[in-house]
Length: 271
Image 1 (cartoon, rainbow, N blue to C red):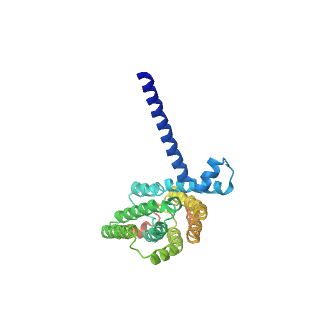
Image 2 (image 1 turned 45 degrees about the horizontal axis):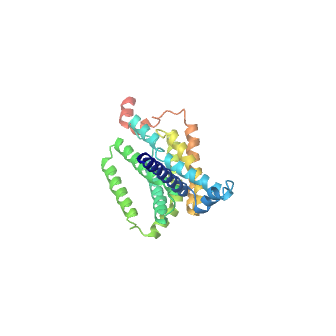
Image 3 (image 1 turned 90 degrees about the vertical axis):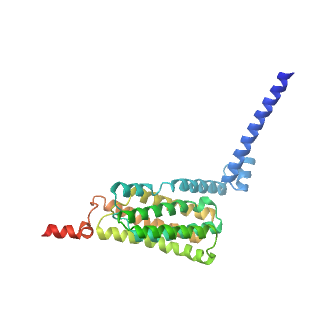
């Protein structure tokens, strides 16, 4: 009698575990799929619904980009640290890009869009700040680096607390199209001027290019927002210029502008 009672308890506990696991799986699927697509694919077993397939692809791409954004600028950070120099990385271009990233980030946050459609901007924002700080550090511009930290921290707090007027955020998001393209074009101009891509990371540039291409599809599919869509279209075009430059200047030596950076040494050599 005791044995049968314990057996019943064991089977009941196993049943609870299975049902609990089933609930978790169901919640995970509902997180990835809309209610319509969940019913269509897992209740009616219609696995070939075109609209739902688009949503699935978009979600998978979005979260893949989100995961990839954790490391997208790490190669650039490592390269600057390895060479102990930010030569070739324009602080002005990175600052303009930082403003563009913040515009997209604040716009997505305020509009309460799905994280998969804009969540990578959080990681890009942090990593871009790190890149700028490292370049300033190796240029021994410590005061300017401290100013960057204060301003970026203040803007982030204002965004989270929703203290920035929506009109400003909308205008900044609209301007992010121009800002992001301007940033990439200015970096391309700097590369052309010194005939080198310096310490720009090819891996980072390639990942940014691929990510911006994928974002065109996810933004169209999940938000339909023309501001976001055109931002990523123009970003892709501008990033492609840098990709071409990386290939063209591949054989160029990094310290191609030594005369500009060390004029005193050059004068001594000439003497």
